[in-house]
Length: 149
Image 1: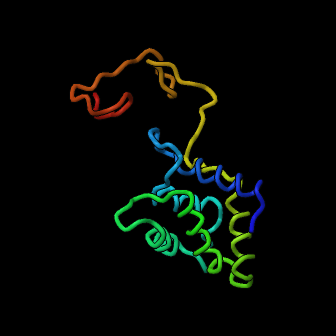
Image 2: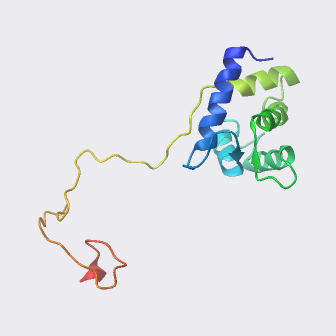
């Protein structure tokens, strides 16, 4: 079985993924979307032996019949279910240990988030038309949209 420090790190990873994308989440329960994200970000899914379908099936298997989320204990059961599938050459205990090492200490990866080095001021645009403010009569378009004219 994994050491206490590793288990604390595993639980911390569970909590970080559990609250990802949900401002109201407490970190006690994880939904299926965040479970799939955890498996993808932590390289539990490899596309060959463990696929996204396997991840979804295991989630459904460990959660309660009418539940839509899993708690930390169910999360550990889910990892236990996936471990022998992901690490076929290892014993069940070694596989569980290895899958815990993949997940422990990891955080959600934010893909597609870009940080602008130079903020664009209101009323200006990147094409040099400073101070030009366009209004859209339908209030459905944004500044610089050709349909706004």
